[in-house]
Image 1 (cartoon, rainbow, N blue to C red):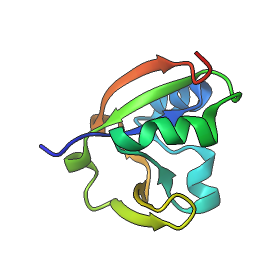
Image 2: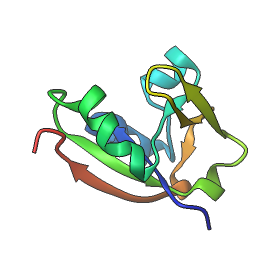
Image 3: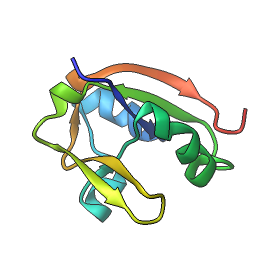
Length: 104
């Protein structure tokens, strides 16, 4: 199994996903993919995008279960390859869902 990746969901979006069997946040419709991060990228993502935005749910995602929806794409802004999921995430691909406070 490949190393997992992570996504930080709004609690309401995660609650909705659990009732329908897949996670498809508003950003998927707006951007065409769901942002994710490797373990090494998480601290930078928290600093750049999550501080001050309130509690989140940290989703640990099974990379193998996301294929072929998962594509690593280059970010000029951060100079790294970031995982993007091009479709709803099936709940079976979520290894763990844990409360996360980016401001703690």
